[in-house]
Every structure is written in C-alpha cells, then in structure tokens.
Length: 134
Image (cartoon, rainbow, N blue to C red; front, side, top):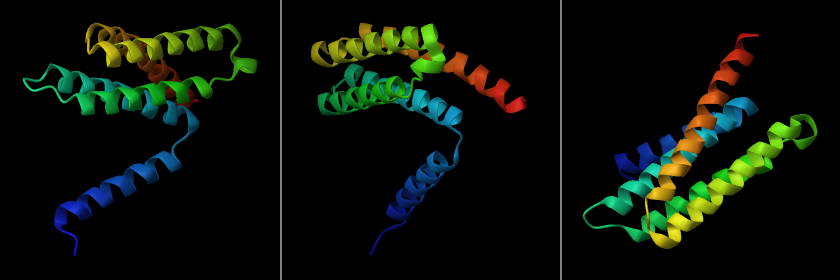
C-alpha cells in the first residue's frame, strides 16, 4: 500500500506531465530553461555542501546538458537565421562548460552557465509575454 508521500509524489509527477503536454511551444522552452537552471543549482549545492554528493552532481549536470541539447535541437535554423546560429553556439559553449564542471568538480563553469542560461531565459520570457499579449 502506498503512503501519503508516494501519492503526493505521483500527483506532482502527473501535474508536471500534464503541464508539459498542454503548454505552448514557447512556454515549453521557458520550462526547459527553468529546469536547466534548477539542475545547475542543485548540482552546485551538492558540490559545495560539507559532504559533496558527487553522484547527485553528475546526475544533475547530465540533466542540464540534456536540457541544453533539447533547446539546441528545437532551434529553427530556416526561420531563425543568424539568431539561431548564435544560440546554437551559446548552447554548445554551455554544454562544454557543464562537461568541464562535471569532470573538474569546479563551480566556476557553473557560474558561466547560470549567467548564460538566465540571460537567455529572461529574454525568452519577455518575448513569450509579448507573444501572448498579441
């Protein structure tokens, strides 16, 4: 028999799946940015704790890499032109820094990735709000 905590986890996972399946593509990009930032912050906390959890660091940085890869794969180079090419370069750099952080267990690359992703996320959020008003 499941305990109340398991039902709460199941409900939370169901809500997250429903949210992802019903949001616009523009909002989905925003959710991916948020998830990548969250993964980096969890990894940073695990790395800088008194007793670093290196397995959690690796898992979360791998998750962040996967999210950045998904963002890159979502680029529309036909319609996006130079902007898509610039974003692709930023995503590739962010991914490289995530790999470096994972191998070196250094937080400096995480600072770079957080700055890049946060700036892109904020710009995208402004754009999404503008699109939804029209």
